[in-house]
Structures are given as C-alpha cells and as structure tokens.
Amino acid sequence: MGERMTEEGLAESEKLLLDMHNRGIVHETGSKTLHELLQLSKISLEQLTSILRKHEESGYVKSFTDSAGSKKYYLTGMGMIRVSSAFT
Image (tube, rainbow, N blue to C red; front, side):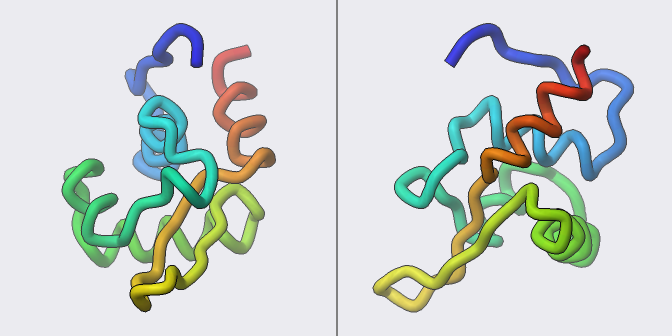
C-alpha cells in the first residue's frame, strides 16, 4: 500500500478518510461497521455518523448491508483520490 500518511493538522472528517485509507478499508472485503469505525476513530458516535453521511453524499465513502444484516463502510476510489490530494 505504500508509505503511511499522517493525520497531523487535518480536520476530523479528513482524518477519518486517511485512517480508512491507511487501514486498507478500501473495498467491500475490508469494510467496517459503524461500531468498528467508532473504535478506530475515537470520535463521538454523532460526529462519526454525520461525517460518514457527508462522505457518502460526496462519493468518498460507500456503505452496504452485508449478508448478516450489518451496515458496513469503505473508502471509494474517489475517497482515495481525496486522501491523496490532501498531501499534494
């Protein structure tokens, strides 16, 4: 996956995208539930829910319901481009 990018100086919404990128949450097979992302992100449930909704609307994150009925999230190609643009 390449060199790990750092979160220093980024807004929480950008940190979430970066964290998803660095953890390989970039396709359905590596997707995470809201609860899993909450544990990784260390931000409030309300803030995480709001950020994920905005990122989905922007096309940076996609969600789906898996066969067990759990809603899961992952970073899209557009989200990966957004992360990369923060470091150029």
